[in-house]
Length: 331
Image (tube, rainbow, N blue to C red; front, side):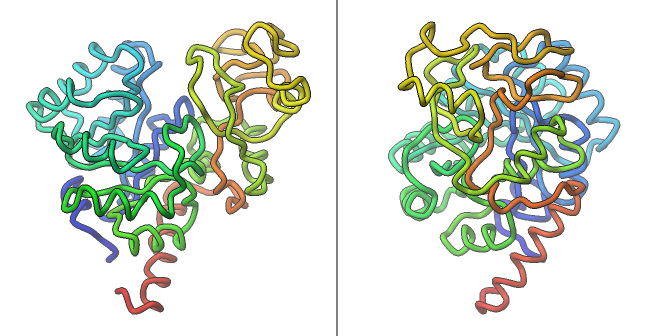
């Protein structure tokens, strides 16, 4: 069995964590990942309080009390009420991102939960550990979605490991198969944090148009940009090249209010009208020019070639990583 000390801390069998992937995360995906022995994560930052309660109740039915899962919050937004609800419900893993974790450490620990915090540099990792977090997620620049730092995973991971040892480090960015998992374990990380690969899982709440673009993407199609802002202006992110980005780049990357097609409704559906440059990804039930929306994905999209059940993705990661490390004499 491929395991690390972090697995014991989190109560999981495999050193693999499904990144919270924004609106694409849902109870079905989280439950499938956690039942397979990895750690599923729900993103609750933008969810209404009522939805948080509903999702937690659904996961309680799908997983029961003994199978762990985690929740994620972006600290650039107000999270107090939703965090309190999660802790009261007995959530065992809380991850935070994009802000200072210090104000939340004590209450997370008081509830008996493990606190993970995402960083983009070794200096930031040290600050997070000094604040009391239990493990740090070091996010390389290759990552999809919103990207905090500027360093690539290969130099970042060992730098963070050296800076905070023996506190566990989780590697994020550019990991889409067991080879990537084996690589980050050899660099000293104790788990991989994987988002893009799970966007192309059967259980993810992703529209078919979005999934097909991820599966068809080359590693060079995932571009680092500030184009899609919506309710989170100024936050850098990585998304797949599309017609919106092409028009914005051709216009010289103008600022908000001067971008080509700004204000156009490109999609509609259960979540209302979606405007060009909005930060919502294509979700099931939406219709319209979905290709023009924010297609968040990391450079590892170039390694994703089919949609699979989440459990098979977890199994593939573990099997391939074990084989690679065995060939290298590491297991």
